[in-house]
Length: 256
Figure 1 (cartoon, rainbow, N blue to C red):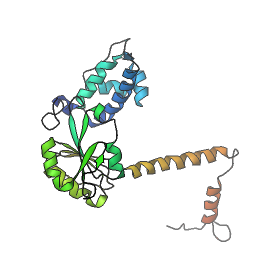
Figure 2: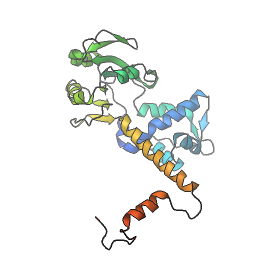
Figure 3: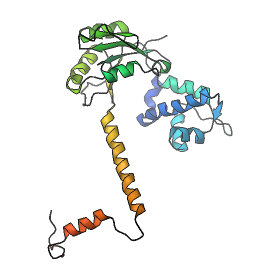
Figure 4: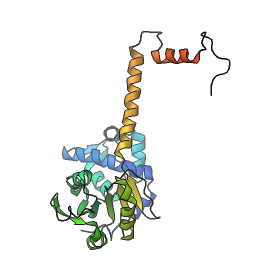
């Protein structure tokens, strides 16, 4: 099987828009679920609903793959799984190193979904001497002093950073200097990389903050819907009172 360092996905992928590339894993996840249920074909509407996009966008995305389906039949599930997997480079073997084997790094190492999607955790690296030699997910943790050798020996082109933010850039620089050209960054910091190096950032705190925003908005909508017709929320009446002068008049000049 080919390794990630010597083989890249088909050059045709360069003509696929980034937005489409970002949706391909969603389609693949939905298609894989259908395949596991032995569903032979799927319509664009059914697949779009399962992936959370509209069917017109799905058909446009698939046109970049050269797949148009069959009128009245839909798309062949197994062939689409193969097509998308090939475009994403998942028909190859991609060795990955994880740097920073704390709770998050160990959890990622134990994640069983990597191997089934074309990724092999080739090495676990940590700067703590006490971690070196320990087994995590059946893999021996190696010290960061060996990082460059590990990357070279295993032909690694993808690195995962799960270190504290203060050392993430230093780790990133070493990974890039050693030949890593794609980085998945879990550290809560922005990394600076040279041209030709791709970085994907996963910030769990930002995702939680976005969810908190939606929860707050839903709570506000529920409170507003619970009011009798014509009633004004207390927060609005309090604001109106605060805007009025001592005698209840609205000031001629509103404060900045």
